Every structure is written in C-alpha cells, then in structure tokens.
Length: 234
Image: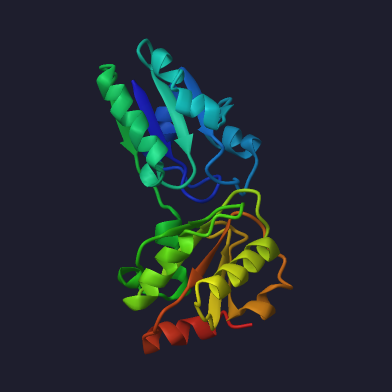
C-alpha cells in the first residue's frame, strides 16, 4: 500500500495518524522538490524515529516507488498537505491503474496558514506561481483576481530570494499595467520562525526573509482585514 502523508508546516506537525503509519511502513520517502523545507531531513527523522529517503522530481515522477508499494507499505512524506500539487494526484491515479491501494493523510498547508494575515480566505481568487525564469503568464491570474476584487496568493519558485521575486513582480506588473499599493510577504508560516510583513514594495526589500515564503497581493480590503494587517505594517 502507498501512503501519502502530509507533514504540515513544521517538522513536528505531522498528525498522530500520519506518524503511526510512517513508523510502521517498510520505507519512507520525503518529497523534496516542490518546496524548500524550512527544516532539515534530520529533524523529520528525529520526529518519526526512522530514516527517510530524499525523493527528487525525477524519482517521484518516474513512479518507481509504486513497484515497492505492490509488495509492502511505502510512505511518501509531503510538505504541507499531500494533494496541493497536481503531481501527487497523478501518483494516486497511476497507483489505481496498477491496482495498488492508496491512502491520503491530510494536514495543514500554506492555503490554511495565510489566514494569519487577517485576509478572509473566501476572498482569495486563483493561486499564481511565480517561476524563476522569464515567464510572466502568472500575471494573467493576478489581473483576473483584481478584476473581481479577489486577493492573490503568489507561490514563489524554489531557489528564488525575496529581492529577486520583488524585482520580477515589479517588472511584470509594469508590463501588464498593474498598479500595486501595499503587498504582503509571508515567511515560514506555521513554524516557530513565522513572519508576516505588510508594506509597499520598496520597504520590503530590506527584509531578511527565509524560504519558504510567499507574496500576497490584496484587493479591496474589508475594515476587519485592514485592522489585522496594520499589525504587520512596516
């Protein structure tokens, strides 16, 4: 059987059920390419009391571990919640084709944690992903969300730092004629080092932000949202 186990946002936020399953699995893999983990592999091993094997994009998308799951219980640990990446949904589909049983152990993800900003979750539109190269199609999502007064969560590609992300956002907003006022930067939400900042882009450039981080472009704010965001103003 194959278990997809969500780790949540901190090294010790795996659920009791997820922990029990990981402990009894013959082999435990750690998916490590969709996000830069805010902790070491060793921290996870200490939490579950077991060795974990790093699994990069090529290994996961090649689905070699499904052959192992035919014969024994295998766990794939995923940061946040297991099904936020389409790759992981395709794993389940392929397992079903091969008559391999699967179980998903859900957990908290960035989509839950951004509520700490005070923004109302139902006012978010589509999520955008900022790539670490010249592509700018994510701005179509930003524009569409702003047109319907919806907030935009922008997930930042692994390997990008804050200044690089802000530079790209400024350039792409200019190209798409999107005028930004204050934006939000969130770092390591759900961990002991969680940080939220709210301000104009220039004021955010001096921040020392550690990955993983995301950017939120707010639309029109409710007065309660404004009140909470003032606590994070810089």
